Image 1 (cartoon, rainbow, N blue to C red):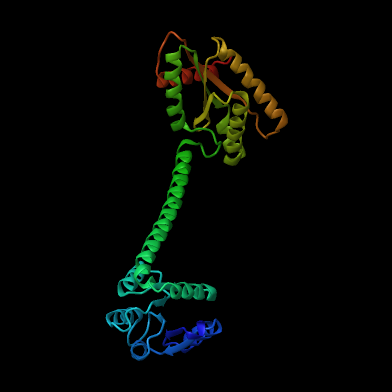
Image 2 (spheres, rainbow, N blue to C red; image 1 turned 90 degrees about the horizontal axis):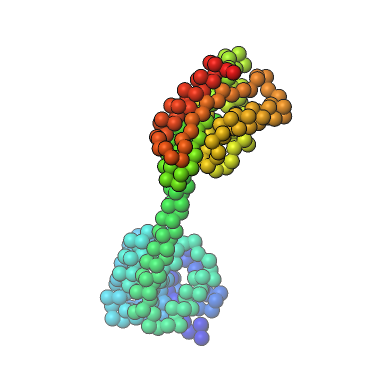
Length: 324
């Protein structure tokens, strides 16, 4: 059956023409080769082929124009045309479909894929009328899918970048604790919630004793280590639900909700014990200690976060300069 099927290959590259002729002949087809569009038209008018396989880029008449002329001639109009192209530009695909191409194959291609397309087109003589619209639809669907996948990937990247920026904007880079901006946002929210639900609110305000001396005598790198040590102590000493933050320099705060009235005294002892355990396990060239102030709001009262910070800061200053 294949021996009776004639395929015209239109290709001005000797190498490409020979390769196509070899592939198709080996699969049982009769193959003729035209070196250009004008020669192809003359051959088709003299003896119409069952199928034309043409390159798009040719010197005299390109593949698009060849398609148009095949379709404009009553004798050659029914012949299906496969265009070979190195381009993936949608404009080229649409131009080819408009010119009357039955199918596109992008170079480089797998030999078996080419043969499968040839078999399919030859098996359906009405494919010339149906294929353009089907391929156009397939192309549009594939392009939409590709664009959608690229858009989703870009959205995921943007979301990840936004989350990273948000995290960086709310996190102290050195200690990993929430920074002042994060504390103001979280603390203000927790304060209002606690006041609505009638719970005690406590704010502990602390700084590192002799921190300037640590920086000046041991280096800023050692000072940074001291700040990270304090962050580690605070994380271990308080609950995950408590807000622990570094709000600037060597100053740290902890907001605690729902404890009893005597919590500040208990928290002070808890912190002293936590510092001792840490320093016993992690010898340092400095003595780590904290000055701690506190402020609280009873369930029956309301206040602002700024007021709490001011009271706790003042309490810490008093404790630092008037130790008992």
